[in-house]
Image (cartoon, rainbow, N blue to C red):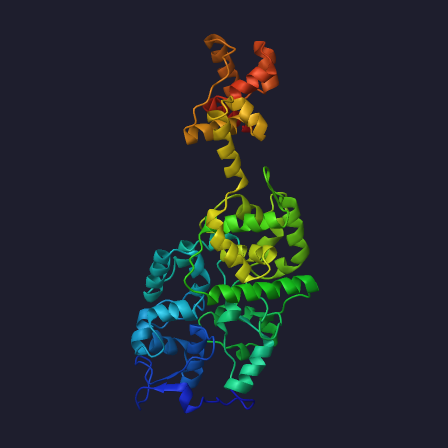
Length: 451
């Protein structure tokens, strides 16, 4: 639309024309705009709505998707199969649209191919109501909302170059908050969340200034971090052929942390140091929509950082992985190199586990002596030995069956080792050893102590 309020039509090479007929709402479209660079499906539909002259948004939806309320979800739209049929496939197949013009492309590298195929089938159908729950987005603390974002400089540039603004897919990735071309912070179209706009086709230039959320000023170091995050995200979404495995990602993180001196050889991650480094580089980004979870890093457990480094979880949100990648690795290529090598990396816990078996089997040490030399709790050493089938010698039993029965009852009731030892007349070390070597009793004791 130009400054006089008139629609600026594209040049003929920017249109597909099917037939020289007047459109009716129930008919397929007689023309289509072609894709602009990096455009979302929702954006193309919004441009078609403007060019078609349709008064009602539902009429445009009916022409493009054969349903009056389809296509308005800009992140994971439905009715893609109908869209392909109505557009005669000239804009791409269902697979092309889902992977290349919706937000699904952001999640694909962290999902199994079967999960991706199932998701595309859902988007091809009539409803995506439960899709975000299937992807685990509401439970991720990153959230299931994907607000429309735009770069002010891109909006002006597109109006001059293309005759109108449009929604860039690269700006919509959940981890992107800086335009890579202009290095400007992105603005969020909060006007899209208003009830009257949820089933409308809107373009960036349609939204007045009051309908945009403008990012707060942040420290230069945090801005640099967001620029790196944008670059890493662009590399992620542009790559193909790698399906990342959660456990290998964790191993890559630990290996790089070790190179930075943030991993002890025998006692795990130096979480406090990693947490402090992250907070120093990302001050203020928790104020950005969808990034509120970052504030949890200040907790003693390190928030999402502790979760990524200490345990594997198949449904970690990609934003969390990308944040830690930006902290640990100098660039995307470095991460991919370490990830590919991580399959053969032996972690400190694996080293101690193997050393335990060697000490017990080859050096004929008792399980307790081997555990002492490795700095392991006896209960952990016994657990590993049982899991690995390592034969080990128990210490001679110092209590008879009657005392063991009384000791068992007292511990199951949750008494402390000191209290039970004083009650029965045993050394505290004996009570503790009894607790360490009887897994079922220890579990019951733990439950009682928690109560």
